[in-house]
Image (cartoon, rainbow over all chains, first blue to last red; front, side, top):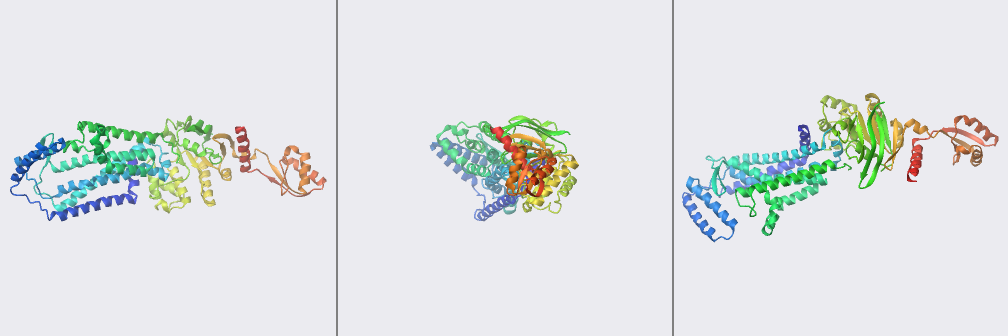
Length: 316
Length: 308
């Protein structure tokens, strides 16, 4: 299996396209870093002397707004903000800290979508290309079960995703440390969950943040892989997956306004952050429900990929 | 003679259409078996079933005693194959391509790769990208790819397609040498008859998905006996005379003279007969039937019988 993954890895990294992807990821991270750097000068993030007073006033204002608010989502949002502000006052953690490496890593994590996009391209072509090149014939007449070959391809895709995320995390971390500096006194992240506020180490928080943000990426990558394996068409796989990557959540939230069955749609469940930091898209959705739905979709995608690949007559 | 590949009543049905209809044959070690048939007769489909690229609807194929259906990995371990054109990864070098395939089998050493490259004569160019290779070089790389793990069965589907005469000859020599020296069984498919005549020991003829004949190549070519071409004038008169005396030999009249199928010992009396009738004889030569004539004959006859 290790040899098979080595093979797939070689086939990915011997093509120039892969390096274009890595270069793009790095260049865009740089551009964002420079943008934030230029902003930094005007916004030096000095802590106001009377920040406790300000927060108290803000909380009072929020309280008023909450009592007037009609929507539950809005009220939950206010409640969260009040709780966090309260915690700050109580434990003497000023709200604004100088923009530092961790703030940048968090901002740059928006680029996970880009890493996802590149991984989708790889996933979409890893099976379909073998058919296009005609190399599938020579690949499948080795004394290795087809299932193992497909599994090695899927694992390679996941490895590639991890690789891209690794690049993003390490590079944005390094760049952030150089441009914005390490905080002398790193502040914990204040996590609001189930009405309680808790402190969390910022690095751990970022890793969790990365992990949860990667879920929708993994799901779409798996879907692209399925389309690639079932239809042997990389354009279709890339097109459809990218479309859903960019619009899936918006479409789902639109549907969620009208229909309650929207909660069964993949994209209503990909964002597990909604249970930790915000409020669920739909009433009645819980973390276990979403995890169950994700596993269900995941199993379904993989089942189709493997079943069709196993049964296929190689005639091309 | 030890059979290594065995097909038993192999049938393939695609979308209700029977593509391959109960084909059975065996291929022995050290033998070059030719698989002959017009385009679309089912050669490639049969070969794809032998190597496990296509599922078998009915019947079974065993290679070295293992069924390709139930023991795929064990069966296919004995096989090295090129199915149609040897498509390699063009963005990799020849060597990387071979490493790629070597990783997928057990016990292929760097040493073995170097030997194989030497054997197919690619040593100079092996570290160049495959996209810079000529078709002949790709074909040779394809051959290297299927010889790496020292298979007992070599399967070549249309190996000479698109090659120039020198390339064709090269492939032919490799194939004969491998069968002889390594006791390999070779299965070659082609629609080029002259090719097969020079390469194969035995041929199976396939038409419309049915195997209509399996014969030793020599027997096959000789089966119809010998014919003689007579260069005579006036040819028309000669044809009439011969028709009277040898009606069973079916003399045919053509632009150059008369062709007649007769045993050799009949020739002196035939000459005497023609001389007596004042026909000028300029020459008599033996015309061995080619595989091509024979092939058209067989497919014509059996095809008609099959359809009728």
